[in-house]
Each structure stands twice: as structure tokens, then as C-alpha cells.
Length: 411
Image (cartoon, rainbow, N blue to C red):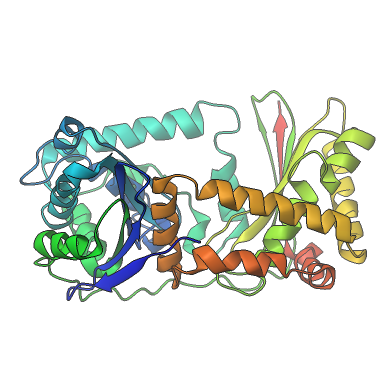
């Protein structure tokens, strides 16, 4: 059980406080409700670019890392389709430093031409290294537009086209900041040996004067139901043939989400999973195979990804995957296998809440979903998943017309 208290400043900033007297370290996590899905198709990659720009200095703090390092702190951030998350840890005696630097870059990010050019170059180089110059690097750049035709999930966080970052203008960058980097579009969590009233005072002192935004209307187009199977085949300089299959699923807050997550574990999480046992161990069609969900806030996807054994034709391997999915949805899972997956989930959930930073991150994310207490209660939903509902959901997901298949083959 992760206990917490919360309050909201007049400008809309939500603040959650988790007290843990066992650690001398305090964690601050600020999640902004903006990700790649909030971009427009002509200006993609901006959420990720902004993650970099936020470390380029603010008006009163030219070097973001410097004051934090002086007091023994560490920081980092990440961006995905749905959110941009900034986090730091530091000794509790120096907690006000965290409030100072985070509030200043929320209010006064320094938009220098030099900073934009530096971070632009960093992102372009990251694109080349991660997506162009390593094996399978462009796989997700191919999969996303295959799966999504309307929703912004069709592009990766790096962007649809790196030219959008190359051509990014200062005016575009400032507009993005003004729209999304506001207190009423953020959630802050403080975790550690802290006093609730002290955190309220510090929050008001450093964040209270920042104005809220009045332009947070989002008109994100929803993906229509897929009506026919989609297929793509490419050849690249890679060591092994790969098959990726993707099926549309529910959104993160759907009652079916936890069942879909359980399905992915039963099918392809670990060496005892159905796909591994059948297609790797017994039939020896794949060297490895897995199944996982995207976990997106809007309707997402469940993936089956496998690296083929030498000499196996992709068509043969693909047929074998479909046969396994058909077998899964047409047969009731046994109680022992289901309980084993639930036990693994329980262990993983406990592990994910071990550190003070993990707790801060999880509270922030669940609050963004709409209910921070889900960090405590969602596990009960997993424990209540039954075999009949698994079969029902599997039958609705694993259909031919809902499939998106990529053959990523070696030359």
C-alpha cells in the first residue's frame, strides 16, 4: 500500500505527497500530459525535442544540472506517445533546490538559438544512431504507420520525419511550450521523508505564481475499426528474419485492459509461455518469440514478435503463429497457468514499487490516468481475471481483419 496525500494549487497544478521516513533521499517527479500523440502531423517529434530543450537551461538557471549536482542530486526524463516525464532525486535537506529549478523551467525556459541548435543536433544524431544505423532500427518506423492510419500513434516519439526537427522554427517551439508546459497540464509527486504542510508551502512559494493555460483543447482523431488485414515486407542488412504481428486492443482505462495484459503474458512472457514452448522449444521455428502490449492511454496494440530460426520460411512461421493464437482463443486456459502468470505479476508489481523514485513515478502516472489510488487497487483487477473472460477478449482481438503483419527479412 502506497499512502499519499494530495492538493491542487489555484493554477491547477496537482501535487501528491508520499511520506517514507526510511530514506534520506527525496524524489520529485513531474509528468506533463503531453506526448507524441499531441503533435500535429506536420510538426512531429516536438514532444521528444522538448524533453531535450528542458535541460538546456532556464532564464535564472542557465545550466540546469549544475545546481542539482552541487547538492548531490541526479535527474533524467523520458518521452513516449502519451506523456513526458521528468524526475530527480536529492538529499532531503536540499529539497527546495528541486522546487527552484523545476518551477523556473516551467515558467522561464530559455529559448536561445544556441540551445535549439544544440538539442536539434542531438536529436538528429539520436535518430541516425537508433533508427538508421543499427539492425532493426527502423522497425517501429515501419510498424506504426502500418497499424495506425488516422491516430497520431502512427508516428514514433522521434517523429514521422526527421525533417520536422531539422526545420523546426523557434516560433513553433515556443508555441508548443506555451500550450503544454503549464501547471494545469502537470502532476507533481514528492516522495520521501517530508512533511505534507512543508510541501504545500514550497509548492505555493515556487509554483503558485505560474499562470495556468487556457488553450488545452485536444482534437486527437481516433483510429477507426480496422476492416482488413494489412501486410508489409522489407529487406534489410540484419542477422535474422523477423516477424512482427500487431492487433488493435482497448485503451488503458478499459475494463478489458488487465485481461489483455494477462493474455500477453500467457502467450509470450517467459520460457514457460505458450508461444515459446510451442514455436521455440517444440517446433523450433523461432530462436525467440514474445508477446507484449503497448500500454498506450488511447486504444493500443498487442504484439507478437519473433526471430526466425535459420532456414525457416517466414510464411511457415507466420502460419504457425496464427495457429497458436487460434488455439489460445479456442481453448480455456487452465487454472495453474493462469495463477502462475498472476503470481509473476504480483512479484513484478512489488518490485516496481521498491524505490522511492518508483513510487513517485507510479503515483504520477496513475493520477494522470485519473486515479492515483490505482497504484494500490489495480492489482485486485488482475487477480480477478478469469479464464472465460480471457477467451472472450482473445476471440475479439485475434482476428484476421484486425491483424497487421511485418516481415522484416535479411538480404
